[in-house]
Length: 561
Image (cartoon, rainbow, N blue to C red):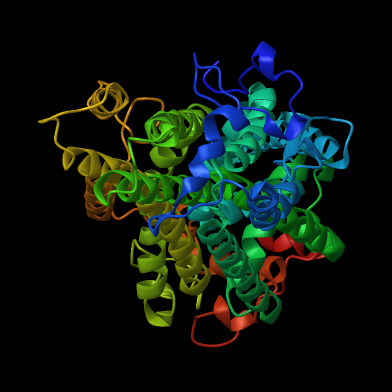
């Protein structure tokens, strides 16, 4: 086990429960024995004497755990809202908290239900998607005008929302990876959060401030992001905000709609598609981002913890804060090293829990960002061009989509923000951890040294120069530092240039399906007007308003025109 609570020594069995140890692997430590004297030094401000003030020390340790729990509250609410927190919390008198997995709690039930929905969506949604894209031939006894017309409509809707489908399927696949990871490491997840609560209590570190700031910032960002998208959707100024949920709902419920031309026979069906599709789209999108947000939160905690350790080491070693003639002076080196080992356990615990998730997120995130940015540029460049869209002789013919670039830009900015902040936070952890090496390197090994001082210096040099980097990594496949950030965005730029060379349309071409594109364009334009609920002029871009009747029920005879 990489991290865990150390066992009490026999002579310490009568100690109170609040003195439970939190040590590194292979070391047995107790809070009273190993971390009591650590209150001699204060995070970089020098040494202070509080040996006889046990009540103040105990209260501050409790406050450290309490502050961490409060800082985790916004993250816990977010994880619960996207079915990522199947844990039960138990509070102890010393301020620490124990997290245990329980699938009978509301969070556990929600997690199970969402996992089932993801499996259903991937199986049936993918089947319906491929059957539409490949245009499966309708059986002879079902080859009616309604069936054929419905297939044409479905093909038009799917091809019009190609970019959205790509982004959504990437999010679904990553959400499934996260769900399987949480289930596989459900007990590890609980022990890991419990270890954090015990560690800050034992190490006497208040590290919640920066993490709380990030939790508040990301909460406000998500609220603003959702509010803007809802305003755009309800005002109907961008077709994609209503058409994309409708398209997703169509793919999920296609096997239940039958062979009728559902979007024309029953307007309520379109509304049902938009409601079901919109809710699931939002849930899947934010669920796919949940663990990268949690990862960034953990990075903020790790950076603060390493920063406090560096400040303590600097105050004790370089500022003359240790009096080696006293017993507690010799003990300080031991405590510093054991605190360092606990921090390494926390770092390795984070690395182990998020392995699998980070690889999936960054691999799929690169492709996702390229598609989002390309769709934004294409919608911004061609979305308002009525003349180009209405010219039947041009091979790049399409239906105009004014203001579709706005939600595309919002989603792209959100994805860039999350991936950049996560990469930067992980790189800052590595830099802060290596800051301890700079402090140790300034302490010479020349001259007279006590045994404790010499053992400490050699142990620290061995820790910092071992083959295992003190950095977060994606399962060992890559290490997250500033070089990783540069390589990541260089790769994204390279892939975008390649995609821009091919210039995929990502929209619907009516000339591919009918010898009379003008007639088909009118029919498809009216269908999109009904399906997406936006003003008719978004599609009818010919000289005058169309004279063709919309294909409503008996009007299907125009299909033979």
